[in-house]
Image: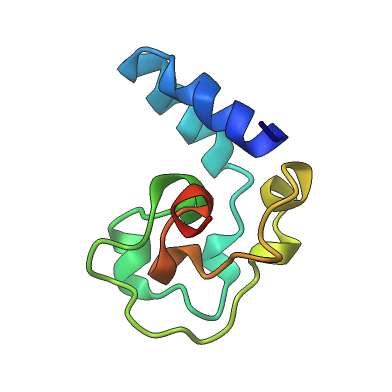
Length: 96
C-alpha cells in the first residue's frame, strides 16, 4: 500500500464529519482553480480535489490542460504523473 492509498484508507475510516473536515483542510492546498481545465461552473459548484473525490459531476467536460503533477498534494503523495486529469477521468484509485 503506497502513501496515497494509506491516506484514502485513513479518510475512509473517519466519521463523515471528520472526513468532511479533513477534505476541507486538503482543499486549501488544492490548485484545481488555477488549472486550464477548471471552469466557472466547477467553481460555483465548489468542486475540488478531484484526485480524491472523483471527476466533475457535470461541469468539466473538456480537457484543456492538466496541472495535477504540479499540485503540492499530488507531489506529497506521489500521484498525478502516470494518472491525471482527475476532473474528467476519475480519482487516482479509479484510474489505477
